[in-house]
Image 1: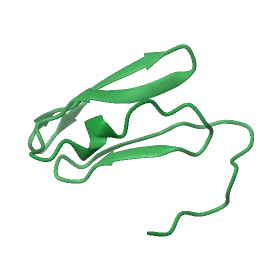
Image 2: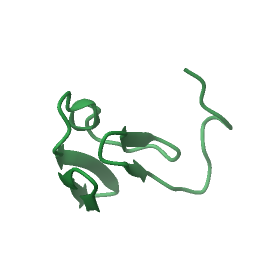
Image 3: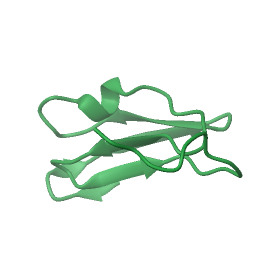
Image 4: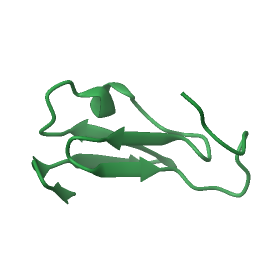
Length: 65
């Protein structure tokens, strides 16, 4: 997925998704690992790329950090 800093690579397999590579410095998006529950999100803020796993029912209705 192209972003302002370069290309972020995402793998989708067996109903789950994850970042495998991104041009950002800290690699938080890559370390997030596999997303496999509806509503889970991985974000690469420096590259302005995000991935959310959609599904019929989320285990929560909002996120707060």
